[in-house]
Amino acid sequence: MNPANDLFVSMSKDTTVRLWDLAEKTLVAIYEHARNAAFDNTGMVLAAAYSAADVNKNPKETQRYYINLYETNPCKGTPFSTFELEEGEVKKLKFSNNGQNLLCTTESGYCILDAYSGEKKQKFEPLVTPESGVSLEGCFTPDSQYFICGSEDGVILIWNVRTGKQICKLEKHFKTVNCVKFSNKYAILVSACQNVLFWQMQPKPSLLDEGANSHHKDS
Image (cartoon, rainbow, N blue to C red; front, side, top):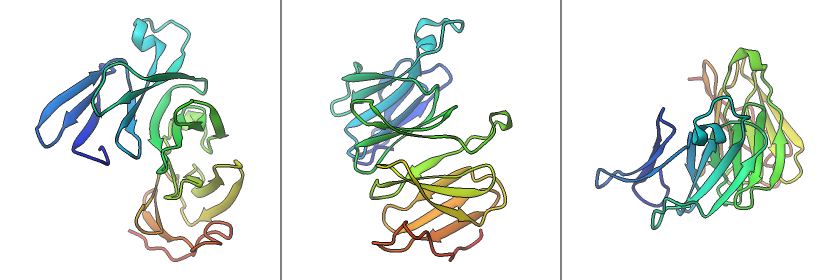
């Protein structure tokens, strides 16, 4: 969903991304050869990931993966920027709240890029065995300074985006943590495996340097 208006995107099996106006109930634009998409924090930019094989319709071609950036106001079918991603196929895309970073969840782990140059800032290795087929999701904290992800062993890891250092572990889950979400309004982290936990983070300056309070609720 666009954070600034009633536009939202949908992905389909024909490798297109479609932009819709929820208020008018109309199709606004179609972006070819895209498998994943996300709006930036302003809603003015849409990032869409695709592979060269999608464009050339040749599954035997050596896989190369790209991200296109499009303007959404007004909507334009031609990207204003394109950069190649060396980390593999993008499973999920997510902008940081400050709009400066783009999180790419790939088969080889998590990769954080400069949102507009495509320069790789950090890479975090997956804490899951590829054979398991488990798909994990990470997120940024509201201040965009930290990256949070789950793991197959039930541990939540928190990393400093600027330095790439792991600074904290949260250990309350007993199954794979598939999803983590951080509230932009409240200092609360929500994580999920077979149950859901709510974490109340400590205020600055010890927000994440000393971890999180153990107050949590099972769902």
